[in-house]
Image (cartoon, helix red, strand yellow):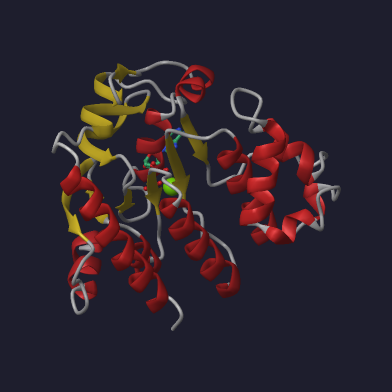
Length: 261
Ligand SMILES: Nc1ncnc2c1ncn2[C@@H]1O[C@H](COP(=O)(O)OP(=O)(O)O)[C@@H](O)[C@H]1O
Ligand SMILES: [Mg+2]
């Protein structure tokens, strides 16, 4: 399986990163830190004290059964939902409970499960919406097309006429255009063909190499463990387990059991 390739790229990246870290002072601060987050919908409390952090340059994947609150975590970080307790910190700034447009300005960019594209607009128009807040538009477009060459041939195609996989690329491309401090992606491989799943995996690893920090939600366990540095398991609104994704061969069944049982 080609996914093996990610492990190799990941390993070589890790060596570079470790070398880099060793030449710097060891004051690694979390890019994103969530403490004791409590949130839900009306009387339905979903998150019951979630703690997690993502270091700069890291990919962390949130795993968990359907309905365990993974999307709720992302929506509370990006401000679509206000927590009743706890804090969300982006670098040195508290962003707890600020509305989505403000957290976007602060650098929190989310690719939701629904992708939230404008179907009536073209690929190029959708991409440019990503750079409204910050970034050089033409440079951003060049970069987005560089990541997704397929899109450059179709820059004037109406997005609603594209396949799910192509739309996902527009959504990820648009997110990159705004140069996120942290990119939140909710099941990027969801509903895609194996070919697109592989492509999304490769793109994610490449984004990491370019310095993008990511918190992912992913149902495809194999993909998740191949591309991320750490994983966390959410159950009953709490992070109950997690760790490094290194040397997990043979432990997939245990992880599945922890997720579902
Ligand atoms: N907009 C909403 N209104 C009310 N309840 C919701 C809403 N969105 C999600 N929930 C409930 O919150 C819980 C967690 O959902 P969600 O965060 O979407 O889980 P996951 O992403 O892990 O599948 C579920 O019980 C779900 O029914
Ligand atoms: Mg979800």
